[in-house]
Length: 452
Image 1 (tube, rainbow, N blue to C red):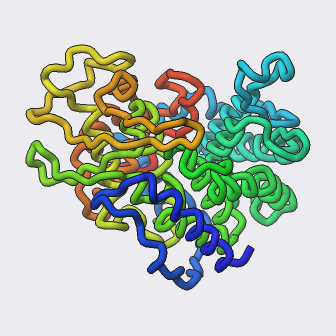
Image 2 (tube, rainbow, N blue to C red; image 1 turned 135 degrees about the vertical axis):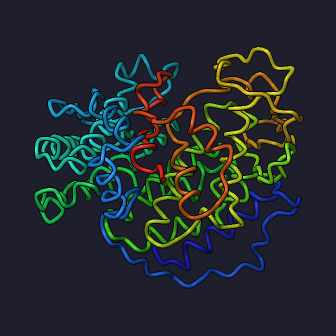
């Protein structure tokens, strides 16, 4: 697909989207005056996805010196069930993530994507152990997982050529994890030069790319039916596959989507409003598009947005700083809301109240409309409703990615640092419990992103 055709689609669809979702200053993005930039040629010095060779060198030096918190973080990785070289992959022929109510009778295996989630976590963790220890058994185990999926899985289940359930789109949330494992393993026994590697790249692209690309263009023929994490699942898939396959067009397309796209993955819609911190810290707080939903999803958005921006940063595109640090403001907003509570909030449903500190001033929030063409009338989603309080204070191993990056480049991230300090060193996502979505983030942010 030519880049000018992509931009034309984005401009056309964006006009309908922005009529419904308000951004910070109350005005929609003016696409009539926007001109597509020239295509950028990114330099890909592999590994260059979430972790560069310099990153691995830095962590290995810390581990060699038994420095903290890296030593304890690596000990946690060593104890993980997913980082065991005896781990065996469990690929399925067709991936499914179907709604039980609609499909249980017709498809007894209506949910089998959890096989992929488990194996993606294992491939990544084993790849880390190989890269940080140079022990062949971990590289062999990680490689065997990726090869097994490329050889045995035909893709995501379809009937008559089409997905049968929108939930299947969220299987893409594991694509960036698989791609990052493969990116780390490029240098293992020259695997990146083999036919096996080429077969894996072909499999991951054919399984995820067309689906993710179509969703970002059409959103299932709705104007803005979806929450931010749906866009981010597709965006992280496309960017990681583009880097893995050295596909400049994929990379350009999805980075431009972040800046000018038609859905909630556009940074100006992902971060609806900016505020000065009422506690006088000087921090900017950015209201997340899912902050009025529940805190589990708001923190998932921080995880996926962090991964997306870190992958872009490692190939030369600084999205952390884009728009005066708008995504960092979003992470600060979500972190503060989940670490601090107002004095009148004694109990939070589904939250971990022992984690909370107190904040002196009320938390800033602006009601907004979640637009859904399938509803007769969209309704405002209030932050302080039960839905928004649910999961408040939950633990997700993502915060040292934000804090470590910002510290390294000289950006402020006070509340990300506050949350990170309570988890440090964090572990694999499976060690924090929760539902199947626990494996939607990689974990080990202290090990790989903390910066002294």
